[in-house]
Picture 1 (cartoon, rainbow, N blue to C red):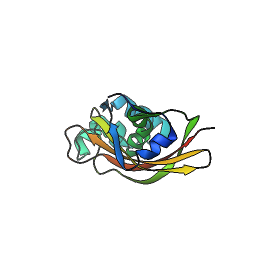
Picture 2: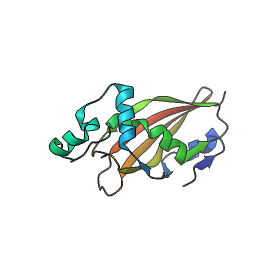
Picture 3: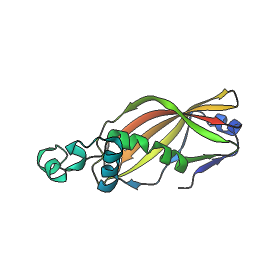
Length: 154
């Protein structure tokens, strides 16, 4: 899927309350999980020890960190929408996040992206995006998050 192109902040604001789109699938490899564990110092066995996870985990394999899934929102957003006429976008924070289902190593995930709101701020716009991250073959989402991004025009 190609990113939806929006030519201005004004055009973005008109999309408030609508679905932006669904991203391509991304495979969450054990290598990526291991790299995230190293970067965050979170080496809990459920993420990095395949043999133990197979024996002791209710999932039968290692799973991705919830924060790894959350960190992919910026990648998903770039796939879903391109806002032109802005100098930069800044992560302003997350209003709410939940991890209803795990992401086993090797699983494929994608995001459905909705623009909940887009309010004017000095020199730009504050946009709240609702992400529903789906795992292929699962009825439950693996992450639901409302992420706030500020877009600045100068």
